[in-house]
Image (cartoon, rainbow, N blue to C red; front, side, top):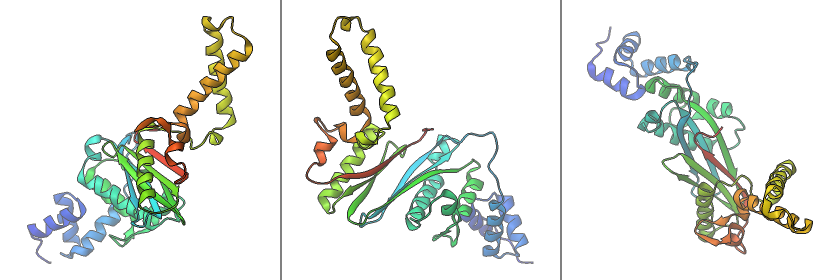
Length: 283
């Protein structure tokens, strides 16, 4: 039987996050073989399940963008507490998973990503998540991800407010100016919370529902009691325009200069192809 030293136990704990007695037991069962002990703990962790009845509503948003700006991903992973969300192990896991998603851009689901081999461990990414789960003793949920690839455009990302908000955006055209513009647009999206890219993207039922809200508010206002129907319609359409300004990216006033819209900001330089915005706590 190999001698199990305190140094061996410490190294195994550092590499796996296992408790002292758990690490020592794994080394004893592996006859002092560190790699075998690590493998055994990983197999054990892979069988751990989410703890029922505990909500994971904290967490971080993380992004990964390749240097050439042709590919970017945005992910959200959740923990139960803000304390764990700020833990170095959790933050490192988020960065690893974001890069992992960037290395597997064709993955269509979270399960596909978690089943793919993580380059840092040579094992399925799912096992890396399970190891963090075992170390942090909290449920860890890989909630969602978005991946953008561009052939002739530019992809960029922006993480805001202590990794609580993240944005991924794709613009047409290339070069340093477009990259800077993409960052400005991403920062604007983080602050302004648009729901749609263009007015044409707003579903008809949403427009009609908003029009009815504005119509009811307009008709109930005593100041409008004696106004002609055509004037009332203009007021209603003006109220609908305010909805677009609040919720449609291209119609929003630019956060750094509200005298121009985002559409005017990018005019003649580029077009916004698509965007994604993640915020911790969203349904």
